[in-house]
Length: 384
View 1: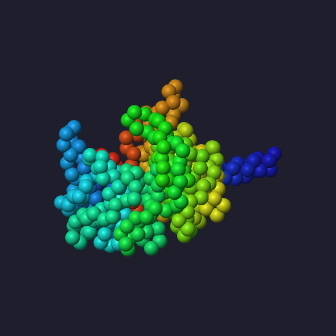
View 2: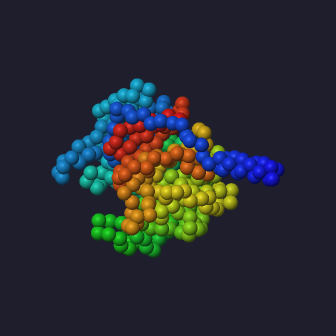
View 3: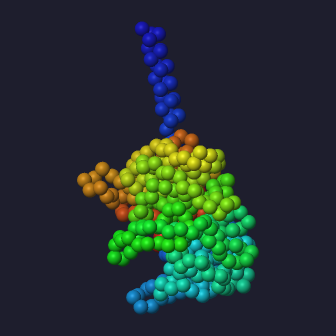
């Protein structure tokens, strides 16, 4: 009997150890609020000198007037926001901004106040503190473009079914891909959804709200995230060496979302779940295939994430789906830590509300610190 009890004790001990090994350990880290609130509707970029640049834009305090927002520099070390008192020649919001070199920043597309000059491109010179016009886009469809930086400082941008590359040496754009027609697509407007015809397309699929991920082999993965009213069953790869596109079938049970993280092995991890799943999906660039990893609980969507140095991912914002009678939720995810190695949520905080604390932009500023710019909320630094 004693031997049996000892054996049972050993088995229980092993079971406890196994359970402990599979559970996430409690993550250490804290949020520090700063005395700086970012302006709504304008993109910030982290410069090479580890300072944050706000190109500016426009604000509409009433139904008649438009107020240009000046460019600003946020000095992280000094926790100081400096007004550069310089505005874009055509102030606009919803643009894509990228740093070309240590002294020049490119502002691509965007939404002007009077809905004109959508295809404009401006360059900001840090030394002279001036915006100047450069060659305009070939298309006027770049209202809210998405872009990535390729080799040789080339800029690849996508909106709808049109794609272009900006040549930094010649300061001009050129279309990429073979032109063709897309028969019809669903376009969201103030009057609702309706069919429209889009000509002079270059991508294989129409992307209303595309997300772009530059893979380690130089290719660019293009997919529609959860904002899109069009649920494409295909994603695309852009191959810069041939300026061509190739389509990849997307399994029906694999949704892709805004949070995408490139791992050290070159694979891409997607986390999200508009259909009440905190689904974790993996894309393998070696086989061009997607696979489902797990469903996190509770389900959430709309989160943004960034990789931490300890092989964990910081997730911020997003609505939480509960098992209430109504399908929607009145809770949101303030933050969560996803452990890649153990495939589980390490730590999370859920609050009551309507997901208003979606993080606007997240930057890794070194020394185990993450800078978080929230929409109309205080700027925070997460230290881990």
